[in-house]
Image (cartoon, rainbow, N blue to C red; front, side, top):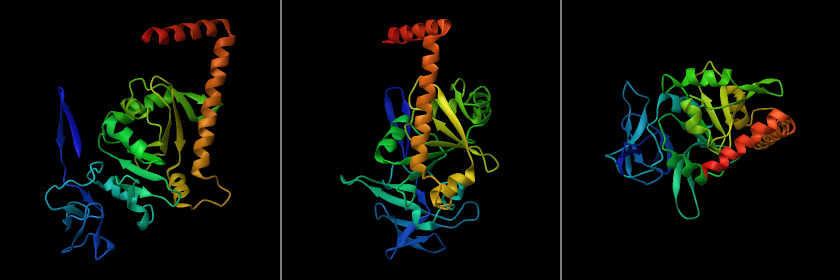
Amino acid sequence: MGVVFESNRCRIIRFNRIMKFALIDGDRREAAPGLTGACPIDSHPIVARCGDLRTWHWAHKGSPSCDPWWENETEWHRNWKERFPREWQEVIHQTEQGEKHIADVKTDREWIIEFQHSHIQPEERRSRDVFYKKLIWVVDGTRRKRDEKQFSNSWAQGTPIGGNPNIRRTHPGECRLLKEWSTSPSPIFLDFGEQAPLYWILSKGPDKPTYLMIFPREQFIKIHRGELPQDARAFDDLVKDIDTLITRYESQLLQTQQTSPQGFQRYLAQRNSRRRRF
């Protein structure tokens, strides 16, 4: 479902939800010519769409209310999903209160991986961050033409952390992607195509520097598939280590600012500026 804001009104646009799996006699089945099934989330009838122009998929008859968080699936979505075991794909996640949504991928370590291609409203993104306790976003960075160039400029202008060129402290600047995603508390990975690595956005709030980290695509996949050597750190531990690294680095920067004469004056000016905002 899409949401478009017009003046002070909110107009809801419903899309015909499509998916990879349907239930047939209780079994999860992929679309094939002539099949009909049931939606795994609301049990409404769905039909197999098996044309020549699009990947075969299931679609609701008409546009019944289903999962409002689901976006129309692209080849990009399907390619990502198929890198994970079949039983991990399109898993229903339900709370004790009964609210349920279909996760793109749910790993055996309880991580939810959502593959986001289309624009998403901040309110919906925040809702998903809260609903899924262990959420990872993989965002298609190729959707808009200018995003990759803007991101490259931000990366190039960033400061390497501890001499490591693969982790940089940046500011969103003119980069629309970073402005949109750098306030999410969940791990976010930007995808600029098969030939490029993923970029991990490491940021914890608005008006703060954004940390970026190069993350090899195949390593991301193998970590979550559990294919790395047994002594490899779990992703849970890696997230904690990165948070600690950023906290220490920011603390060191603050100490440097406060102990040098010029830095202390800048620190006071920044602090007073923040106070005046409120």
